[in-house]
Image (cartoon, rainbow, N blue to C red; front, top):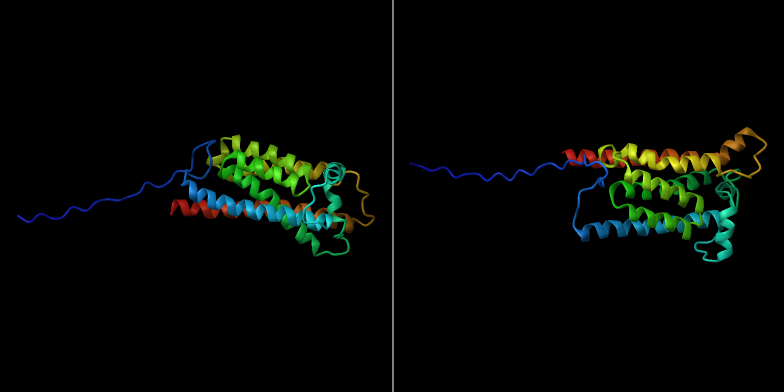
Length: 218
């Protein structure tokens, strides 16, 4: 009687991301997480230094007077000096895309990883980017995104919830005290970087999550 060899089944159970308030990504090796987060933090530090450069002309500035001034200077003033979007229209895309990265990376980190990592990134926005309003909005948004049951079940909605404080800050305080331009078209140009930042952040988050979740299902 011939005995047929038995085949060993090595089926791997697909990962289910529906875990409520837990981080979206499954626990991984410490080395892999450290490498990925180190790259994220390095890029985020550069983005904040570049944001300070295009908004003040300096890559780094740790003077107390500069921090004090940033508290009382509306974010929208960055779009008018030292380089004005009214004169250099191409700076709309520079300001908008850099500001988008300042929003996207911490909030996506809050959804996918630990909340503490996102809080550290918000501190970086204040320390290196000299943007206290954005930093406070990111802290509130990161807490909302990390504590909602949508975090793993519907991560895109969790990201939108986390983005809401920043959107409110942009709508209420970003241009507070800034004299509006005389021409309606110029007023739109001044607000264009903020609109572009929000749209780019939402689109990028949707793309990243769609690619990641489709890869998990395959």
